Amino acid sequence: MYAAIVVLTAMGLLLGYSLGMAAKYLKVEKDPLVDEIEDMLPGTNCGQCGLPGCSSAAQALAAHEAPVTLCPPGGKALAQQLADKLSVSVDLSGMEEEAPAFARIKEDQCNGCTRCYKVCATDAIMGANRQIHTVFTEACNGCGKCVEVCPTNGLVLVPETPTLRTWRWSKPEAR
Image (tube, rainbow, N blue to C red; front, side):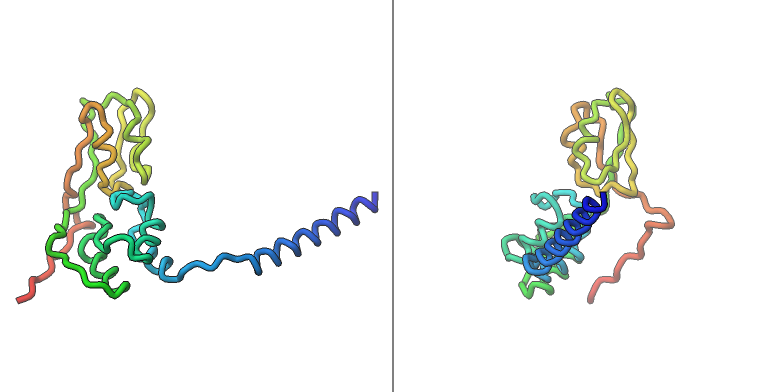
């Protein structure tokens, strides 16, 4: 019995030491620029840029394989920050600044098919099969994927209505 305890303890120590050394010497170095760019992106992994998520978008930006205007939720401000970070010039005149929009479900047209629920990247839609769904506007990023898959056109994107929490003073225009 004591031999089994000694053998298992020795094996645990040996394997733990081996894993520690492997983690130290076989570590894969990551580009710090990718981490900085990923911190700048919204982090919602909505896929509006055409890439699977913000981490792959950051890798594409760091490798100069994607334009700095790839993130619609970030808008012009993010595009300018990315251009400054990557030291590239960018023409923002063709990029339109969209007002934040959120998905809204028309209850009389929702049949509870759960297609919208399955494609939502931020889990902003809640509901069950054959039941009316609801959208949490705090979590919705307005990507529109749910609107595209809805068979009954029961989902629409509506602009954000300003409240005391979301109202912003408009920026003055340069003269």
